[in-house]
Each structure stands twice: as C-alpha cells, then as structure tokens.
Image (cartoon, rainbow, N blue to C red; front, side):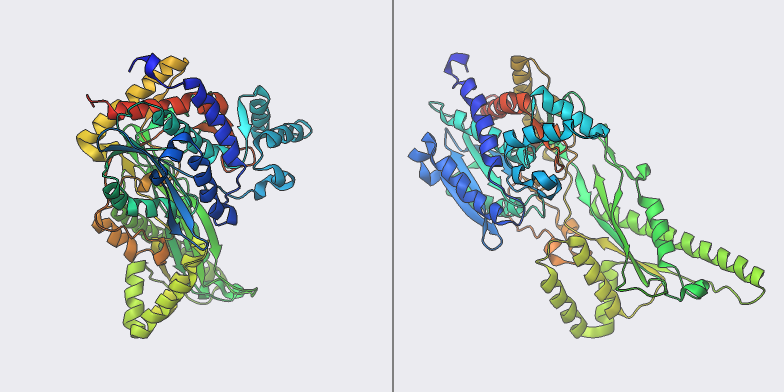
Length: 556
C-alpha cells in the first residue's frame, strides 16, 4: 500500500500514550471492584470513537466470571472477506501494596514518576534503585502500576485498531479483545476462548491468527525487549506433600523427619539447571520453590508430621506426563536419600550411646490420583463426598497453594496411611507450552508475515526488532488459539486436587497461530514498574498495524 494511502502514523503515536495513561488511571487490581468496573469504562471509551459510534453492534461486553461479573470486551472492525486477526490483552493488575507511602499515586503515571525520582534521589540506593532512578531521569521511562503490564499493550492495540478502521476498505477483519484475570487464573482469556467459536459464527469470521500484547522485561538497552515472541513457556506447579512420623524432639530417632525428606526434595529441585528444557536454541528457566513449610497449628516440642513444598517449573517441551514422572522419580530418590541418611545417623548415635537399635524405615511416593483412590477405597462414597465438599468450599479462595495443601492433607487422612511417604501432584493451574511449530505451514506463514511487518517498522523507526522463541513470562498466550490434548487434560485433572485449578476446555475450540508483540520495560509487578515510552508509544502500535496488513496480504 503506498504510504500516501495510509492513515496518519503521528495520530497513532500520540493516541497510544494518551490511552496508556488514561487506562492506568483506572485501578484494576485482580479481584477488586476496579477490575469489575474496568470493562464498562473501556466500553465507553471505545464506544466514543468514530467507527464504533457508526457500528455499535460490533462492540460487545461478555460476562467472564465473578460477582459482580468481570467482563471481556470485544471490539470488531469489519473489512473485506472473512479472515480475522485477533489482538488480545488483559486489563487486571497486581496489587499496589508495594508502593507503601506512594500507594495513592500508583495509578497516576506522571505524578508517580516525579515522586519516585524525588524519593530515590533522597535515599541511599541499592543497584536496582540506581538503575530505576537513572531510567526515570532520562525521560524515556514512565512509571505506574499496570502501565507496563499491560495497559500500554492494550493502548497500542487500540491505536492500531483505530488506524485500521480509518482505511477506506480494510483488507480483513480486526478483532480487539481485553480480558480480566490474567494475573490469577487466566479466567478471562479462557472464557473468551470458550465463546470465540460462537462469536466467529455470529460475525461470519475465519480466525487466522492472534497477537498477544503482553509486556516483556529487559535490563539492557531494549534489544531483548523489542521482540516478536513465537511461543510461550509452559508452567507447571508440582507439589510434594511429605508425611513423616512425628516424635518428641528428645527422641529424634523414634520418628521419621519430614523436614529431612523435604530438604532432600528441595536440594534436588531448587534451581537445578539439569531440569531446564531446551527447544529452538533457547533454555527455559530453572525450577524454583514458591512455598515450603511444615503443616502444624500451634507450638509443641514434637517434630512435624507433614511438610509441604510447591515449585514453579517452566518448560519449553516437557508434557504433563513428563513432569509428573520426573518429579515422582526425583521425590522417590530424595525420600530414599533422607531415609538412608537418618538410618546412618541413628546407627552412629546408638553405637555411641551403647543402647537401642536403629529402625529401618521404608517409604513410598504416590501421585495425588493414587492417594485419592486409596481414600475412596478406605472410606467409601462418604469419603469421596467429604472431599468433594471440601473442594467446593475452598474453590473460591485466592491462595491456590493453601487450598491445595488443605485438600491433600484431608485426602491423606481419609486414606488412613502413615508416613514416611510423599504425595506428588499439581498445586495450581497448568499453563501449556505453546509455539508456532505446532501450527505447521500456517505457523510458518504467520511467522513470516509477522517478521516482515517487524522488519518494515524497525527500518522505519531506526531500531531493531528480533524474533525470540519463547515468551518467558506466564501469560494468557497459553490459552490463546490453543487446543489442549485430551489425554493431558485428564492426567492434569486427576492430579490437581482442587477442581477450580483445572482447565476444563470444551470441544470445538478454534486453533490458530499466535505470537506475542508487546511493550518492554523493567521491574513489572514491582514498585519501579516502568515502560519504555519511545518504543511502546511510537514503534509498537505501528508494528501491530503493519502485522495486521501483512496477515491480510493476498500473497500471504
């Protein structure tokens, strides 16, 4: 298309910054009233634009979840034919609590940026704070809760949508969607995924691709943040619920130390780089522990009966079957190592004491599916009903690790088993690994078109935009255009104690290639969360717009 026929790029640039700041001023912490109210404010904003004033039937708000209902916002610009590209981003944010005395300014980008500069200038700083101050002083970075993650991504998508709507005859259909709850369970995107086939049928659309608009971090000059991500990491949250044998602290060898078993599991898992995946030349992050604690109520001089650990394990290729099998084997080795260590120490102790004999303990590792079956076999239908009632009573809670831990403890009690043993399973929602390689020829064509658009814009703006294989942050991209395999769904369901953390995907879902193209900045979720304005407000909306044109190009 000749440049003279293109709508004004300058208008798109200024519009992105304005929208980013305006939407950041609408607080929308996950599960808050602000999150519930955001959709109506966005509907009003979009409804006031020229295209949707003329075509109000193309602007929808659909209930997702919660009371009051959180809603997905859908805005469709119609063009030639049936081909449709979807732009998607979330509008919920993490808490503002870490802003402390500046919490009242957390959603006021200009005022917050000024206040942060003043605060940082007046204090002794650590290296991270030095970097934040240097960034903010350049004038290229703007702070604000959710500005980076990810209202500036939404703003860039809206700016591209409005620019697309200005074309005399758009070459395809562009659907912008804004969803709640990415920061918790991706309930917004999952509900959108489930209803999208009906939306496509209603508007007679053929969804051929998607662009997720989420933000990435870059601690350098932005070269790594200016990227088109061709896939996203998978996330697993394997847990180990350890049952030892409690004993009075003065008679340590009369029991089995749950802490020692837990420590061996921790040593085998924590930051173990051998457990990192490699695919397409990129390595996934190492697993880390998100929670480790003994399960007791109140103080007594007795060793704990139970210890709980939950890990975050990001993958590029491992399946649920792979992760459960590897984690079970790792737990079994750790359990045996702990029991052998305790036996050796007991033998040495009793030899020195000249009395007693060390007991040799045998342990076992069970999946949650196995311990649940033991519970039902032991307690019958009544046990199943009690566990189901507990599941339902806890499913509305917002702490998945606590919820899962309580259900596993109850299941073990119903099974009537004693330690030493380790129960393994998944403590919260699984985010599937996704990549264009799953889409075959369609994925390769989509990648070519996306990268052609990125190259065009990079040259135009005198910058660089690279292809990266995996978006490292857990995101809605895992549920965007992705149809989960039935066998994997069943294994996850059987081994995830709380049903609320199982993705029950219906039949008939759409499948199409998806990439992530979003803003970059630093320290998202932190007090110094800040977005790089030159790229995000100037380059990003142009990339998204050109990507849409490339997607609809007839030779594509």
